[in-house]
Image 1 (tube, rainbow, N blue to C red):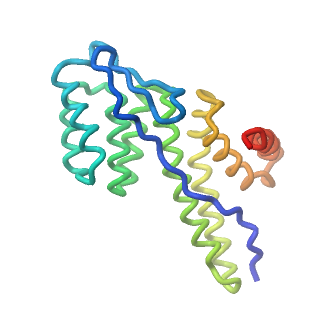
Image 2 (image 1 turned 45 degrees about the horizontal axis):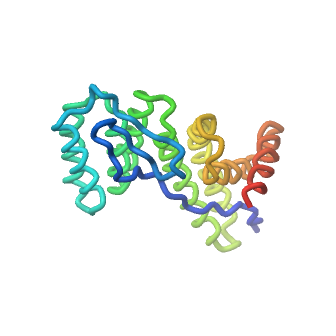
Image 3 (image 1 turned 90 degrees about the vertical axis):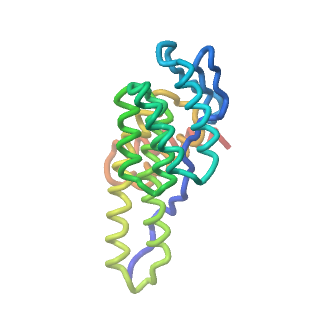
Length: 213
């Protein structure tokens, strides 16, 4: 008989940028408490690219993902080193359930801007939400399926290990994000008995989480 000690992991939402875009400065403000701003450098802004970005934001609110991708790809031809466009492409691909392609887009955004908080957060979220899906599945298993439960737990921890470095890097950039603190706390709960290092991080983030309440 299995012992259901698996910590229930809840799904989290990826970060979306707001529709606020200044054509003069090329500045976007994201939705994570307005603490992080993404900027397109002046040499990346032209009439055509700004018009396409406006179309992207209008289209991204709809379910016409193919149309949105076509706008993004056109914009990328004009501004191929634009990390925000790769970030937006990742969001659209995620909405299309094309996770592997979304991962590649987020990684490209991070390659262009290594301290890109939103891309790091969303990349970690892909793996984290897969762990949440496995957690939900495992918690619903009958007690008689202990082997299946153990296999699910191993898969869950693997997904969390994939997510962890991206969340930890994002935390280095913005240590005040409450959602990120909650996420890291949840991950360290899962690993706290695996090593002294994880236990130490768990205790740190338990304290940070308590201060949020």
